[in-house]
Image (cartoon, rainbow, N blue to C red; front, top):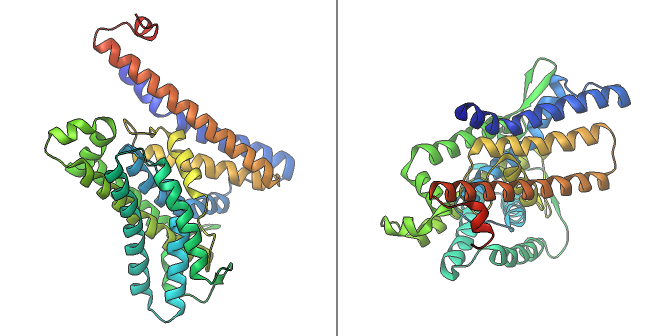
Length: 341
């Protein structure tokens, strides 16, 4: 019974995702006379959210390691405009994406290094680098918003090439996202490094006692996340076909909300890649459904805010349940402990 209960708990957000699909299918048919569950639209949802899923892999590592990164969207934007500029200047596709991914790794590793050095929760650190990156992105384009087109065809091959499937088309970016999620899951579940990531988020003292440098682990976690951030922007550029200064800004909140909604705990302590995937897809379906219903963009902001609030509440309740279970295992009465007795 306990095992069945755990499985049901794990599947809760999957049921929410299925429920959303059914609700929007009914509403879109009644209100708009359109088929929300058509193969073309479902593949379109996957294509639109492929780069968010890849960013989500990086964010999941950071969250499971006990950190957070508010600069992700601006990092992705800076990396994107940098790749666009060097590609437009004549650098080939392969050197361009290697440059962009290396830049993403370097910036993210810098965040991790400052985090490890100051030994404080990285909220303020990454908020500061968010401002730096926002300014840097516009300095690169002479202080004006710029859209760069006519990029190498390789971008489209990796992110925006259509593979016909029945009445719809699958973007190649979805395949890249599947590979990145599988890679992230493998690292977390099948490697010593992945086990240390979980330990870093739940008990960094134990990591230190095992002979692993906590500071190095934090830097490595952020650097690994940067790898996925860079790949995500390559896919995003390929899907859209161009790049501008603001492409990627705000994705950190969407992805973090998806992670928490799916069950990845803020500050470490629990979660896995599949949780992130389900959470991000819930938000993707929500946005697509509201677009199908021609709802105002402002109502979409409201809905996203409500989802983020729900994710925070869910994360808090999960943390309280974990603490209660830990106290019961230790032989303490949670009610008495909460009352200070």
